[in-house]
Each structure stands twice: as C-alpha cells, then as structure tokens.
Length: 478
Ligand code: ADP
Ligand code: G6P
Image (cartoon, rainbow, N blue to C red):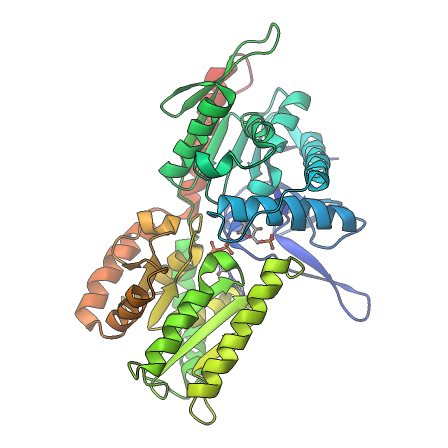
C-alpha cells in the first residue's frame, strides 16, 4: 500500500458507487458541502489520499484513483449503515448538534457501532499516512478517530474539522457518551470549527465536563502516566467554495445559454426565486413553503410572474425524520401548485434529484433571488455558490441568520426563518430591490467570497496544523 503525506478521512469518499440495473457500477459525486469543499482542495494536492465509504453497504471496492486522488474505500456492512450512519451519526448527533430541531435518539447499540466503525476508519488512515505525515479528519461521524489514530501513529500530525455546528454546553451535555466524544476530538493537534461560537462551545465543554485547563483557544490535555501534557488548539476556520472555478464557469457561453433556456422552460417568468438544499429538516424548507404559500394567498406574489424553483436533493432517505419531511414537503408543494399554479406552469417547480455542477451554476445564474432559510447550518455553501455565480452583480441573497455564512455575508438580506412575517417581507424586499441596490450588495458579498475561498481556508488550516505539530513535538520531521 502507498504512503501519503496528506490523508483526508471523511465518512464519504468524494464519489459514491451506484449499481446500475445491468449490474455495472457507476460513480457519481457524493452529496453535501463537505465533498464540494474538500474535492476542490484535494484536486490541487499532489498524491493526496482520501479514506472514506463508497456509499453502499457490503464489501468495499479496491483502492482506486480518481482525478489524481488516491481513494481508499472503507467497508460498512448493512448493520453499520443502520447503527453507525443512520443511527448514531444521523439519528443522535446530527439533530443534537443542530439545536435539537427534531428529537435526538440515544441507543447504546448505536454507540457501540459508532466506536467500531470509527476504529475501522482510524486503522485505514493510519495504514496509508507517511511517517511524520498529516491526517485530516472530517466531521461529526468520525469524532473518535483523532484519538484512535494518535494511539497507533503518534508520529503524524492530526487535524479535525467539524463541518456542522458544535452545540452549546446545555445541549451537548445531553449526549450520553459526551466525555468519550470530547476525548476523541482532543486526540487531534488542531480542532477546527465553522464559527467562533462553535469553538467556544467546544472549549467550554472540555473545561466543564473534563475539567481540562483552557487558555483562550488552547486546551491542555493532561498526560497519562509518564507522558507529558499536550496542547490542542480549537479555532474557527469558516469554510468556503472554489469561487474562481464557479466564476469561470459563468463565462462559458454554453452555460449562459443554458440559464436563458431554463427561464424559457419555466414559461419566461419575470422573476425566478431559487432554493437549493439537501432535503433536510435543518434547512427550513417547510418554513420557506409556508411563507411562499401565504404570499400567493395574500396576492402579494403573482404566480404568472414569479416562480419558486426548489431543488431538494435526496438525503438519508431511510431515516424516519427525513421520510416524514419528504412527505410533508411534497404534500405542501402539491397543495400550493393545486391552489395557485396557472395552467401549464408551476407556482413551485420542485426537483427532487441531483444535478451536475454546470446545471447547478446555470440555475444560480438564472435566479433573481436565492433563498436560504436554514434553522441551523454549519456554514451553507449554497449561499456562497450563488454569490460566486453572479459576476454580473445581479441577484439578491436572502440568508438565514442561523447559518455560519451569515457571520460573513453581512450584505445579504438577513432573516429569522422562524418568523414567517419576516421571511415574507424579506422575500418581497428582495423582489423589489433596484438594480443599483442589487449591485451594491452583490459587490460586497463577492468581495467576501472571492477573498476567502476554499483554497485559502485549507491553506490556513494546514499551516496552523503544521505550526502546532512543530512546537508540540520537537524532533518530529517538519
Ligand atoms: P449541506 O452540506 O448541509 O448539504 P451546503 O449548502 O453547505 O449544505 O452544501 C450543499 C452542497 O451540495 C453545495 O455545494 C450544493 O451545490 C450541492 N447540492 C445541493 N443540492 C444539489 C443537487 N440537487 N445536485 C447537485 N448538487 C447539489
Ligand atoms: C453535510 C455533512 C457531511 C455529509 C453531507 C451529506 O454536509 O456535514 O458530513 O456528508 O451533509 O450527507 P450524507 O449523510 O449523505 O453523507
């Protein structure tokens, strides 16, 4: 097996394997912001490795190469998918870390599976990291992995980045295995978060629950036996997108034509309002539809002039809360279309499938307003992608205050999605903004997104990690 200086470990590989009806395997881009961000980072790295799951239960494919990356698939049996992935990761941690929008479930068998699968990922990463190399672990599914790697490979630098929020102590304390999770994370040299408040929540938990000493962003982990205490840095690194690549796409005449065609396909409405989300209860899709339905009902929006395009990417479809959400969303969309759509045209164009990057960019280019209404969201890359797709300085971003992106994109129309009246008036304001106002806001948003792209994000994280590794472990190769 080859050895790599930089190893990414994430629950998912950047590509998912799908079995076609004829039994052949097809590889498609995996869903979600983590893959969007890390894929563009890894494309610029020579001989980087990515350890992750290929998305289907059962035997893992052999290691393979894609886009210059070395991919090392990790096996998940059907029972692991049920208990580790759908269970502890997405039935316990995901809702708990997102402000308990739905009730988290706690089951001891889910935890046992989480421990076992985290160990499998840690072992796979430890096997492919070169001596003194760097292992960068990602997200809530793998919080125990840093400590597990450290016990096998004390020579490597270990970074961890949490793509989702880290909850306040009052919520985190509910987690039955909270101390094990904290110790797992503190196996890293550097623990990165999206927002400053996430980093503070984490250091507060380390201090109050483990009794560890915390000095600003540094947590001191006491040594065991004769070993020295270690210092772990917990800091925020707001993630971003490959803004340059998206802006470049918008210059492609074929994409411009595709955007124009999309508008024609929708019946040439005066205004297109766009929502793009994984079909997840954290995204506030129900709140958005409620506001939209009321605007139509109050005659504040004319459905023959304005259409809502809602892309809802299939997600975690075997988890109950996601099934229920899909049913509710599709019922509501059906009702709104039944009540308000003109003949032959939708009031809401609802798309429950994945698109490639080009189609997605064409959608952003066609949209007059982008609506992001998350009830809680680590960052929300859709907001940044929309901004990157608008070098023409047109378009308005309506952005929930409860996203990490809202800390940076202050020139958006910021909204509290729980307040349906606020949501409605924000949509109306967006639809009536003058071209000059749009340009001024978009210019400021673009400056922020273009100056802080995902390459800069990765560079800052890896530079900090290297620096800490050097000071924490003198004698280790720099
Ligand atoms: P999350 O990571 O919670 O899904 P983000 O907004 O941070 O939310 O990231 C979502 C990513 O998935 C974005 O890069 C977006 O372009 C992409 N995406 C969302 N829906 C689709 C879809 N239907 N087809 C292709 N890509 C999608
Ligand atoms: C979010 C999470 C990622 C996850 C993605 C898609 O972006 O932060 O860790 O991969 O959603 O979810 P899925 O469960 O399909 O991997």
